[in-house]
View (cartoon, rainbow, N blue to C red):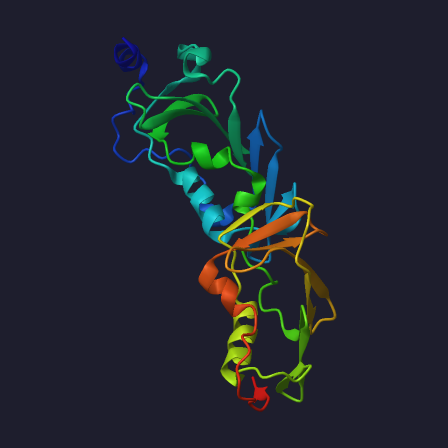
Length: 270
C-alpha cells in the first residue's frame, strides 16, 4: 500500500536518474549543525579551510567524518514528492529525531523505507528517499566527530615528561634525564610517534585512579598534560582540561614510551 501511495504522489520529475538532495556545493558550505532531539546539538564551522567543532567542544573536527557529512548534500534521491501531498507523521517527519543543517539548508531525517535500506528525508518542500548510511552516525556522541590526533597539527615538541624521565631537545640533540640506558632508535621512534599519535576512539573523560601523567611541552609555549588512565598495552590517556580521554591501540601505545636496554647509546639528533 505504501508503494502505491508514493507512486500516486510523485511529480513528473521523480523518474530523473540524476536527482540530488540539494544543489549545494560541498566546498561552499561553511557551517554544519547536527540537531538531535535526544542529545546535545553539534556545531561545526570551517576556519581557514579546516573544520572545527564549536559545540559541545571547541576542538579540531575529524576531517574524514566531516567530508562524509558533506556528501549528504549531494546524495542521490531515488524518489521525491511534495510535502503538502502527504502526511509527514507517516514518515516520522513531523517531529524528526535528528536533522542536519548545511548553512541555511535543513535536512530532516524520518523513517526507513519498507525494505529498511533507505530513509525518508525532508528538504524544503519535498520528501526524498535516500540511502540510509548516516542516520546511526548522527546519533553517536559528539566525540565521534572530533579529530583523533593527540597533539595539534604540525605542533613542534620541545620536551616530553613521562613518568620517571624527561626527554628534551638541545641544539638539535634529544637527551634523556636521568641518563638511563635507552636505545637511540627508540628515542627517535618515540618523538615521531608523539608527533603523529592517533587515537582509535575518543570518549568523555571519566575521573578515577590513574598511573601518572605525561606533559608535552610545545615549541609555541603551550603545555599539554595527559593523565594515564590505563597503561599500555590498552593505553588510555585523558585530558581533564577538555574533558576527553583517548584510547590508543597496543602497537601505537608501546611507541609512546621508552624501552630500556642494557647498553648505553649516545643522545641522538632528530
